[in-house]
Image (cartoon, rainbow, N blue to C red; front, side):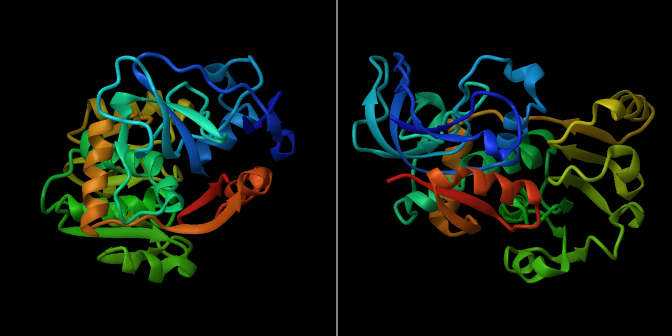
Length: 315
């Protein structure tokens, strides 16, 4: 099969495009003919070697955490899906595997693509939307009426987080982003939009029940004064150097911090699919590139400042 891959850690230039073995199907998996995937920050962090303590030194590695396509084969124990079904989900092999003609999904982690979504739109959804949902609900314990702040509100995760916070019943959603993307964040449903370069949300004393730092640009220590009683600070970007300090701080506070990495979840993705079907949330796509242009896509993502997702299509 054709795939994007790398044989050593390094800059975007280490990415290659060529033949790789088709993955071997297991009994509880489905083999997906990938039509679209996308680029997430985790992809270039793995490629650069930033996470090599977790991803190891076996090569080649195929990046990509979002799969959208058609079922090409099903494992012996699979009952929910049939060949030809339009499905999407997150590969969970620790590295990715989505940026290829074929990829594997566990049956329990896959979901049907809503009818009105194209493969390109679906390819922008799984990792970012699941991260937003698990950050806000599973770890952030968002309650109806809560005041929520999303830092990095125009990014891949942040743009979903604004919409999902509204879908979960948040009373006030504040988005933090650049002035360039203020209008976009407003259209997603944010009640307030703050310019990250002109306004320091950590100075909003006792305003928020939940702060979801989708950009990884703040910390619990910096943000805790902005949290109300029993407030929660959630981030997907753990700071090892500050973890102990933050842990000590939470031990003597009614406020809490939560660091996590998204886990594949068919039920979570099915809920997201229902919201997509109802029009309550939508993917934001800033650029669509062919898979062989993956190095360009990684460079754009690393540079930052692009709203929503960069999608990679496979013909």
